[in-house]
Length: 241
Image 1 (cartoon, one colour):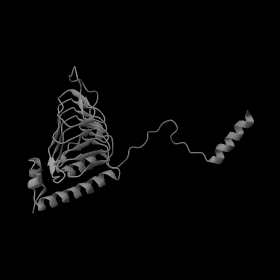
Image 2 (image 1 turned 45 degrees about the horizontal axis):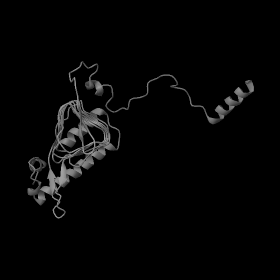
Image 3 (image 1 turned 90 degrees about the vertical axis):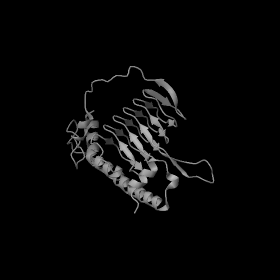
Image 4 (image 1 turned 60 degrees about the vertical axis):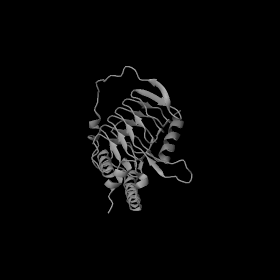
């Protein structure tokens, strides 16, 4: 029986056309498994640790505990997503990962970003699949609503402006934007700085199965007055005045 690992060998070598019917059926089964896992992720509350656990199961490899992900999150395969350390993925992102998605350390991915590793031939009589990996470097920031297409490599420290459609490689420490994305400027004076906090502590303050409660403060613990009580109070104030 064909395994997902064998499917990945074909996908990672861009031999989609050589895949047999049995391979395509196996790929579809994995897609259904990914849908099931993302439905579990997206339809109820999970602690950050639980999200890391779900993403580990979804991708088939150990995801670092520093991952921060805000659901909902969507993928139609899952097993070709590779996530570095201290990565943040905001809500509404869609990863089409059959061709391979590689995300470097300390990368920020904004709301509703689409990473699409699949494409089709332009011949209307032969729309066979084309796939190629997306490589995202370290310390990259991808703005909300951006789309990254197959085969794109984004260099370390680059910034992708919100709403950009990236179809070509992006050099390190540069800003690109627009449709299609074009060079805007080089990021100058790039140097490490001392961090005042560590995202590794992000998981420690949230109990495994408990939503954080509002802290006691001004107004907390007060009984909500009924409509009759509020009206009576208003009448009393009117008489005094």
